[in-house]
Image 1 (cartoon, rainbow, N blue to C red):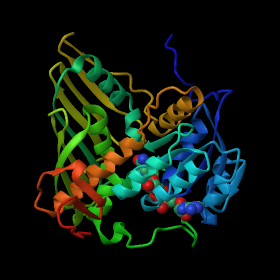
Image 2 (image 1 turned 45 degrees about the horizontal axis):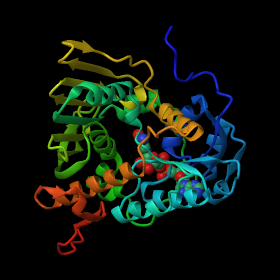
Image 3 (image 1 turned 60 degrees about the horizontal axis):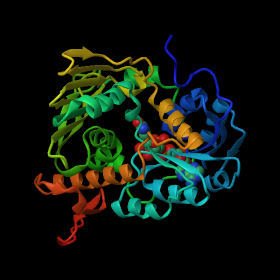
Image 4 (image 1 turned 90 degrees about the vertical axis):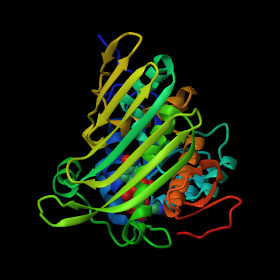
Length: 392
Ligand SMILES: NC(=O)c1ccc[n+]([C@@H]2O[C@H](COP(=O)([O-])OP(=O)(O)OC[C@H]3O[C@@H](n4cnc5c(N)ncnc54)[C@H](O)[C@@H]3O)[C@@H](O)[C@H]2O)c1
């Protein structure tokens, strides 16, 4: 009988005590379930300044403590690992505080918004603390099998292509059926200063919110990204159940990898139809096609062709609960000191640099931009050595 690494139903005797900062949609839709099921996790505390959201998550998860502020949670000596699930622009200051309080950290993607703020975290990580970024797609069975295939049999990567299609059915079908009932927050949700890009700048909102998954996976599978060029355009799609055309958005990002391979990422928000994410990689030793309909469906389909074995393989894809798997993997490396399987600080920095480079390129006629030459934040990136251009 197959030996499972972790049981999703039995809690281990040795567990990491977790505190969650932020009781917004990602916590309600993903982390609540992941924490309840993770074998080596015990929930110690939650925090949110919004009392409606705090009460909702408290009722669902029954933590030992529920705090009105992040600082209170960070002062709780029982909390060992902090999950930071707050607005993207609030990530870095909280990560710094949590590391300073001696906690291990899992911060939602993206690590931050500017290259400089992310790089400054290098001073905060110590040998005693683990920092992980929530690139949960790394934990799909097909992604893990692809990584192994590329390492052992794939040889040279010739090309890589990935896609992320949001769905016109999101609100009418998926939201109502896949997620717990939505909770209307109270009046005290903490938001960062400055414009809400979701309302004012879809170009920025879409790249910051969705592209980290594509960019991190490309780097994880193929290797460091050396340059990107990108184009952004607004498109029209038929909204679900309506003949009227709605606004959609498309990001087209081309990648050059340090190892000489080329790649492409297509972000469609939404496409007229169902969700889909996936990638295709061709290499000297075979090829892989991996498709996962939507991370919350917890299903995927992967086919790996090994040229040396002359055979197709389809990895077992029964356990696709990537939010639970990333937590369990992180707790395991904290408990045992084993190498970190989660994306780490340097992965998070590289992803923010690639986003800033793509943002810069899309504003400058789609020119190739060396990733290491970019600084600033994703909203106002600039190329080091060129005249500083505030392009936000
Ligand atoms: N991995 C994924 O697939 C995925 C999917 C969706 C969202 N996300 C990420 O998750 C993060 C959170 O998203 P969201 O939509 O839940 O955000 P949100 O802003 O709606 O909710 C965050 C919550 O954190 C609380 N908060 C912020 N600072 C606080 C503080 N100092 N003390 C106490 N409470 C505080 C806010 O009051 C708010 O309720 C974002 O970074 C987003 O990009 C990841």
